[in-house]
Length: 222
Ligand code: DX5
Ligand code: ZN
Image (spheres, rainbow, N blue to C red):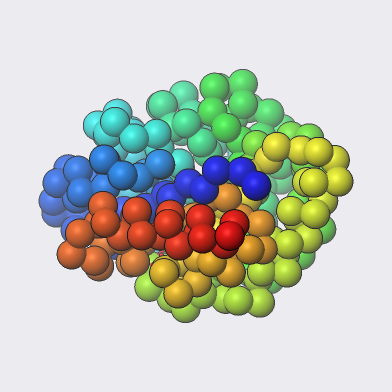
């Protein structure tokens, strides 16, 4: 199986002290997961584009931008141009996912598309040739600290089988409720990238927690 990558989400970090909060993860994380919310696609609002650019440019980590915004087709590639190494938008919000994925790649980032819990995984099958990663949400997007939705794992499994059938190298990311208690089953289902917000930021030593999560997922390989 592919390499396990841990992507701490700074959504629930202390925003009044973001630079220091980012330093807590820089030595151990594989990616910084940036949750962009616009108060339309989801009720909450988080980082503006300008805030996002500052974060992207101010960290040594590659940034994985997760756009929970209503009209991603025009702006998704802007996040790539701003230096984000991976850009994910929601299938439910896109009018032309293939074109948006193409534009993200053209702007130099890995192109990725996400599905909410109610969206069937089969809707992604048509996009296999256009995407570098798929994000299967394991909570309803919009907030950190929610419970892991175990019933999303069959979607991860189905997608992993489909990718194997075509000998693809696309990554599968899971986001929501990932902790030491849930990461193993998500890995077993076939996920490679694990977003963890509260698990990392609520622990006393964020770096140790990132390593513990990676270790726990690695144990699945046996
Ligand atoms: C939720 C966000 C997540 C969130 C995860 O909509 O997309 O990235 O930060 O937080 P936890 O790990 O606490 O579920
Ligand atoms: Zn996210």
